Length: 265
Image 1 (cartoon, rainbow, N blue to C red):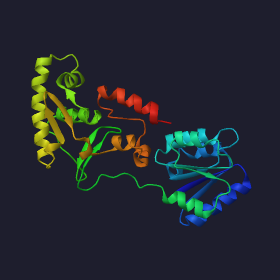
Image 2: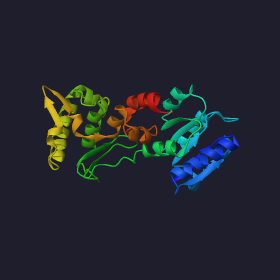
Image 3: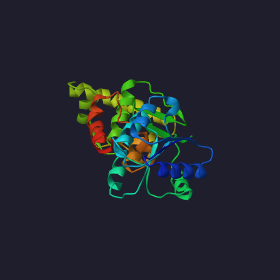
């Protein structure tokens, strides 16, 4: 584990380093007394941090601004602010800082913060896992779920995006075939629904689909999904989100924009 210790006061930086070393003896600790030195280290993959303990009051650049730069270079890095001031707490959590400590800190406080860092999200070995961040993809038992048709997978993506809300044929047609004749689109939707149900039946999850009275939806609670986890406040998903959502589908841009506005630093 590589840990950044950042503080412009030599005495406080030494105390922070010693506290980290006592809490995590095997960690590689890199000390920084100014933000510029941190930004110069970030381009090197061998120096990017797993965890950052940083003061907020830094000369030339605030710790909050520096944290945003760190997250861009190392999206999975956990940020814990260490400061003598508490008025920045709300802003710190807005940029998804992992924690917020008040000086002086000791090894016990450092250890408590490190213990709260979640493991990277992984699909459960016997579970339907849906990935929305970046490219949309679906996994069963940790392996990609194969679809016979590209549009079948896109239909499932659209239903996931709707989070269990019912979708009419008109809504699906407008998303999947912009400008297509509705009559032809409805015929294609019927084929896609049949294909999707058959694909899900192979893994014993055909009841994920709900079709009644001319509308279609999914039982959202039956899937494990990074998007849903983030909406529920899951810290793993918050750290996994790097500003991209179902990037292969143009109709997903509205949701992508909302997520960027609400969750991206």
